[in-house]
Picture 1 (tube, rainbow, N blue to C red):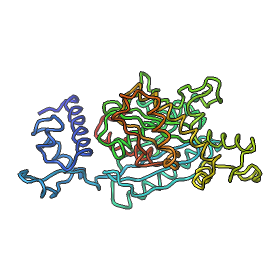
Picture 2 (picture 1 turned 45 degrees about the horizontal axis):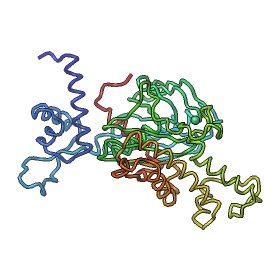
Picture 3 (picture 1 turned 90 degrees about the vertical axis):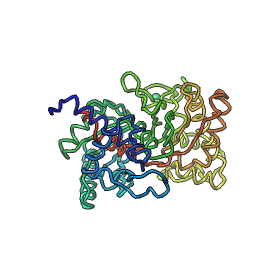
Picture 4 (picture 1 turned 90 degrees about the horizontal axis):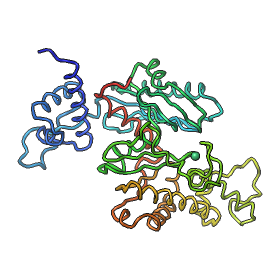
Length: 402
Ligand SMILES: [Zn+2]
């Protein structure tokens, strides 16, 4: 029988469906797999046999509690290979090696400075990728690909970073550069979108098809998942929630406009409002007479707040209220099941989550809040790298993007 290109494509597509159903619902029997995928049983069997031969799926004996369901159950094989997830942040690079079921086997994180320039930062990232590859291979695992998350606008089709305002990078063909160097499939994604995928596949949003992920770092990243799919907008620029206008006369934002949500909610805004309070002479553990070399950081403010410092506490509450207003607007527009909050603000979740919840309840439509859950990210500052791994695992049997 001659297999046409179309048939190959259909099989790849069906294989991706089988793997993704197993990822969300395993262990499953072949019959259950057929029911969940909507594929017929012979197609499922043929695909499963191929996946078992490739060591991506294994048969398990975990069927003892499933009376009346003869036959082995199927699950993903953790040793089916390894994926590398990298986040190039504004002032750090974070990298993990994860097995086929996204268990993190190795991690590293280094500080960077955007003023080091694109080449220096990329060289650092290449070195880390090389170390990650060597680690995975030393475990006897096969590399499946590299996922990259960045704080910018990404052309998915070409794996190109179009613009990253906080890094100062423009038109960087990342997928091409990584592929040439490492000869592996490479997937590039906006950091907020990647983190949303990480929470959807392996974190707080598992089982929720309509949710919004928000992450505050230097900027405010976000990913919107509607009906199980990332919403990207007509050109891929959607979910720029950090640039929602909150105060047209406010602070200048990295995007060139004024008063965007990220200018009033992120760690920078918290630090700025502490400085303003100190300048007004408010008493605080973070007193204004500290030496100029000792900069007040977000972590110091969180710590001071835990020790009862009112200046620190008020600055955090103010940022939480502003973020709550942004979330209330999103709840009215999208009616999500869940809002997942990640990034550096997670450090202060004990204080911020109740403030955000209160603000959303006070400002969003009551009917949209009834079933709404607002929760902290499962992966904290690693949501993006876990999502970068999810990009690789999700796309193993899909058609390559470039
Ligand atoms: Zn902006």
